[in-house]
Image (cartoon, rainbow, N blue to C red; front, top):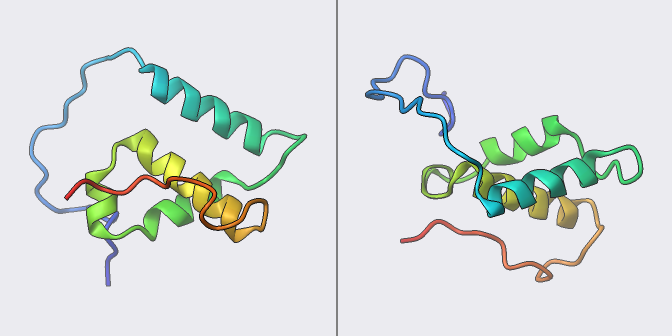
Length: 96
């Protein structure tokens, strides 16, 4: 049984490979990831972020941008590990 993120072998159309500058939001999420996975915080690992992203619903996986998925995963992991209480963050959700 394949999961939402497992798209291997499915028709996907052309992939946009144009270079683009990261947005301010992208840079902030990337910096937050670096801080939370760095040696001082060591809050979670990339494998845990990947596991969390891969567990998202189809709506969230395809409805959120790459960095929105990262932000949601990090937020959920901080709650899961007890660093913050549930309800602390406005966790990204896919737009309907």
